[in-house]
Image (tube, rainbow, N blue to C red; front, side, top):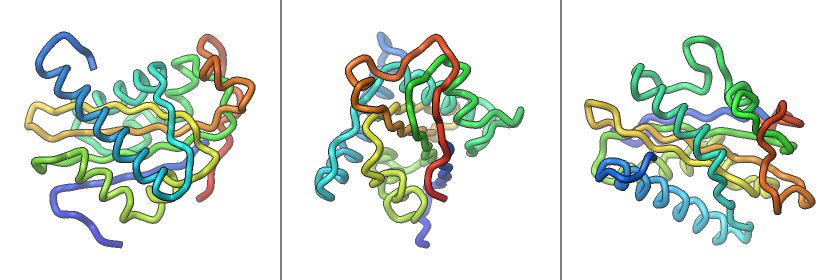
Length: 179
């Protein structure tokens, strides 16, 4: 595996604020990650991932926590996993979930993080798994300027796609994905 200088990555298969210049910049980074991931999926003949605001909130909260407390992991210091975070947010109706996380202090963090995900076998698997059809992306900049990014991937059955992952109840599904 090739590790990019300045980029640190983590992957796990489990299953911005706007109105200010800083928030607008983070929203642009989130959109850049989404565009890059979907371009890669299209080039592989896969359907693009639809962004979901409820998933964005979960991903953004995890990135914010990592940035604030200075860690990069799928399991926070209290032991909460991506599936725990989805359940706590009331996200339900999915059959498979995964998460990629990364950080970068390089000039184009979205590009560097996505390139790192592509170069890592586990991240690559998450990016290119055909079953995934929904995503949530959260990008946060730490006080030292390091960018933390979290991308959630969900598979939502066709009948539930029009309504999005359900909020308000325990997660239905969330089966582990491939190792």
